[in-house]
Image (cartoon, rainbow over all chains, first blue to last red; front, side, top):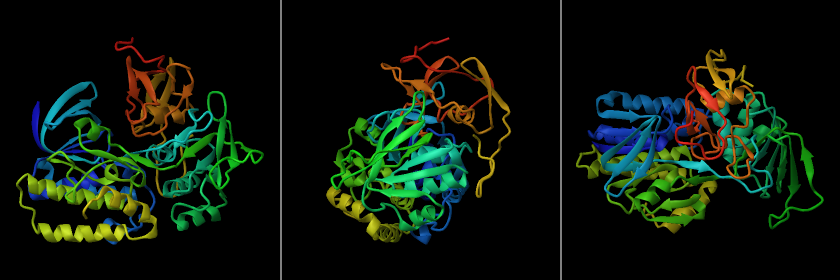
Length: 361
Length: 103
């Protein structure tokens, strides 16, 4: 067993920002991530960010990733990166069990920062397990990270920002988006993204959903139908579309499994996407020395994940006994930024969720 | 199915990494995962459900959902969506839950 100081699980925007704060304060940091590249989901985000200038608004996700990684460079002597490494066990005495390729090993940490992020949800419908049915973000990965098209004709399900942005990126890759269906009566993402794909000819169908996928070994067609005001399908409104790909964009769920394994208090809060850890205003979970930040504490955007990561990093560094330069002012500025990011109408759900969680921010 | 022209990104499309899939020789590019290389060759079915043997492709592409598990170099349950492709890899569709030492 190897002894480590601060261990960060997840190298997305939250984890990388937490790392920066800890390193600046003087700590030794180990970042663990199951992917080869650092950056979490930033690696595939070719669109420009909204939000605040301080969180790199108008930069593309892939460029923000570069900035975050460069920011760690001056501290390389105190930074260890365990990529292609999966955490398979997490225990109360802060033992982290890892698998890298064929090797199993354990790390004993002084503090742990959970920045595990979230995974995309699925939707129940007939044949929803056929190859050719993917999470929208998965298709974004396939296209923007690996340069591979998912198919030729796509049905997008869901009009949140991921659904809208991935529809646009499918068009950029030369893939036909046959239609986008949304169960609700209004677009749930930013209207600017919706009008962009509408201008490019994508059929946006409101109060409509997928009824079933049709195909033997993979999707060949889909049947869609209209929904009534209580979200039930209306018989007789079915239409068959010829598509070979279905993208599901119906929200994300926090990856809280490891926090449950370690025995942290977890609560189901619908507005935050599912099971989230109880954290205090210092981003510490119910287990001392274990912090959580980013999407794992509630589904938001990369911008807020970065702010939360920075705050968790500062608190963790403080608790490890390091002096964080200008600590209280830094935290105050970060809190203001988070408040700003959560001020718009699109963040109403998030605000409601955190009220339920009783986080004193 | 590789993207040739893209307004923002550029991709290496020269398929130089040879590997085998169910006994067939296929090629992928530097930077591919096993799943992306298979997908680029038009192979969407990666696994089968354990009981009903229904075809499965990848779903999440972040190593989370286990829908892309295959036998790679004799090791079952490899998450092919996050496993980098290497020259000479032997990739096979998995039957059932997989055996610990499968040859």
